[in-house]
Structure formats: C-alpha cells, structure tokens
Image (cartoon, rainbow, N blue to C red; front, side, top):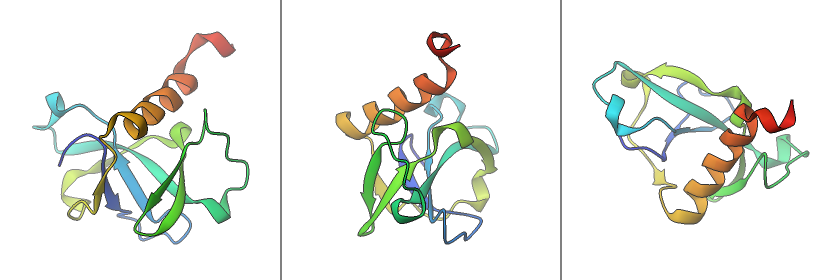
Length: 106
C-alpha cells in the first residue's frame, strides 16, 4: 500500500466510508499505517478547501478530516480502491495536514 492510496474504512462507518494512507513509504515495514478519514461531504457541511479538501471517491464526494489522523493496523486495510497521489490531490492533503500542525495559527 502506497502513500495516498484510498481504502474503504476499516471501521465500516457510513459517515466515514474511506481512509487515505498519508505516511511515507519509509515506514512500510511497520505493522500500522497513518491514515486520515474521508467523510461523506453531505455529512460534513463545513468544508473549506484549505482545511477540508473535497475529493470524489467511488462516485461519492468526500472531505478530508486532517485533524482526525490516526493509525490503523495495516492488515485491517482492504486493497486500495483509488489513489490520490497526483500532484493536486496529494498537495491538498499535505496542505490540510500542514494547517493542522502549523504554528502559524496559534
């Protein structure tokens, strides 16, 4: 599994149907993956492109919830269904995460 691969949520949560792997491949030998949830856009109406970029996955609009980054066991992730590794989507993911951890906002 590669950075920015999208997987169905291991929690099988309808509100958060997908998760995107955000960790670098440098850490591939760890038993866990750092992921960010992708929530249904209809469930999350406060989407702001800088903080919560919107993507279309499997025909559904979803938003990245960068502040809810978590680890999951790699074995719990099913095969990837899509990749957000292209420049624009991956850049949006990195910018959202940078916003969460930046000191610029306090």
